Image (cartoon, rainbow, N blue to C red; front, side, top):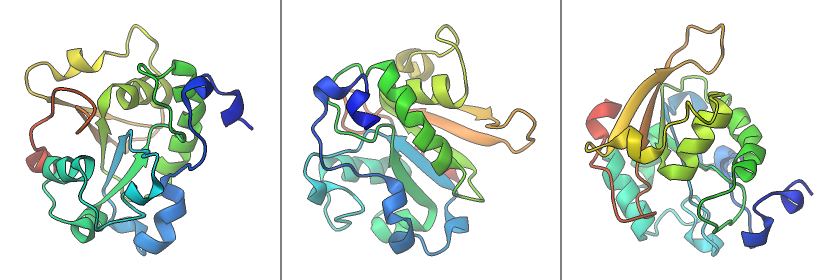
Length: 194
């Protein structure tokens, strides 16, 4: 019902809705092995094209994602990484309304708590970067830098953040272009991921 009242409803195709929690038990027997969470826009209209539904499929998004991260296949990916979507719908509107990003950020908050040894978050594309800065880090509109300003000529940017005000647990955040969401792509960030 919350989705049907969302700001993005005019550009949503429902169903299917795919997101990470549904796949944790089958693909991640040990959640402590996941050190990096990828946040992007990966909600294909055809559920057969979703990474966790069809790990053998190498479509342009998955191919470029693996190149960005420096992994060769799904097995290597799930050994260190998990991917979730900034939105829980198939909104195709650009830009994504901030209210839609705000509505879905509560799911993202919950997912960030799932992985006990999370060290890095990779944020893909403009919508995910806006959502992360505004609704996860709590920055106001003036503080949330547009992706083009963040990335400049390098094609990626990093910052260190704490998700809880009183916590000394710091996370590395790496902002990148979306692998297939525009005319620019980021170079491999494998060296930044260790």
